[in-house]
Length: 322
Image (tube, rainbow, N blue to C red; front, side):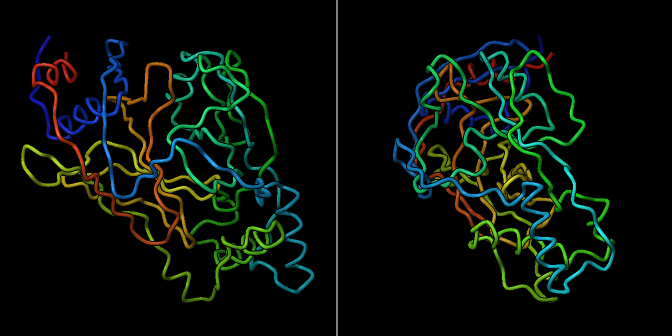
């Protein structure tokens, strides 16, 4: 077994492991380590309990999108090129019976999993959500959208909650060169309005389309050895709007930028996993994440308090390469 010198992000990772009481799984060895951790940050919500309001109505249900299309049509607003509202995705609730099944879901690159129902109206974020109908020994339900035609793993229980039409993912009618991009925004606005999701609507004109933004920013952690912030390289930053999720990984200096654009506010979050590691609150917990704000433009996050790192010997063991 050959040792590889640790990159600087690994020091950050091990500091997080030391302070957060999460387990780190080394994929090649298929083993987990549980190490106590403690960290605070300027943006992270510290409350242990989630607080929910009434669930939102899902504007992406095929019926709701069809109603929005019909309302626009009755007002004389039609796309330059005719479109057909039909199911493009399924809204799925996975019910993993154990953590082996949960791991299989996490390994599927098609799935953008959420511990919470996508329509959940979160008034206050907590540290970790576990469906109250489930025992702690079982992973909480996982929610996502999958394309029509997705091949389900029949060993993992699931339930199809709704048929969805996701126009943002409909390359047949709404590609960049389709000529329908302005109509797409009008269709989304109408669907949001008719389902009571007014915060997702925008005052839209031709210039707004040109001002769409690529989600991005900078993610850093304070390194007490260097007495300065360092980039949180290697974590997975998510930008979510309902069922549409974009990803980016910060570089050495912590900068990240998505490859796709939004024209409305998105929900940012940091998910502590990539192909080399995964961090959890404890051995039987889902992947740890930090909930960021819902906003347009960049999100910058500085983790303010990290006061120790693990020995280099353990660091080398974590990143062994064969």
